[in-house]
Amino acid sequence: MFGNLGFSEILIIMIVALVIFGPNKLPELGRSMGQAIREFKKATQSITTEVTRVASDEVRQNIEKAKQAPEER
Image 1 (cartoon, helix red, strand yellow):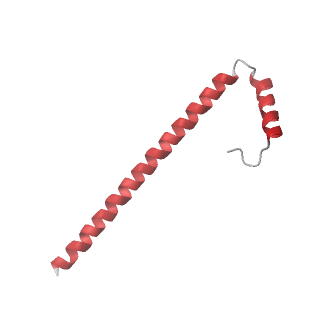
Image 2: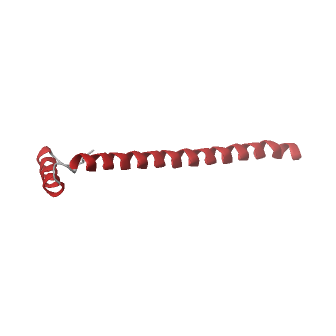
Image 3: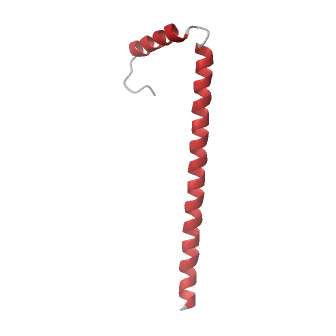
């Protein structure tokens, strides 16, 4: 999740965040970030589902057209 960040780098980032935002704002900031990530995942899933549905419908229509084409000859 954190890529190439080690424990010491994460600790420094957390200390800087604590100094910048203060201990009272960190839980609120964490909740806000968690909610934003959830919303992003939900939107991504919704888009993926819609694209998959449209693609499946198009493939299904092409198969039906291909089945009807020999009958018309």
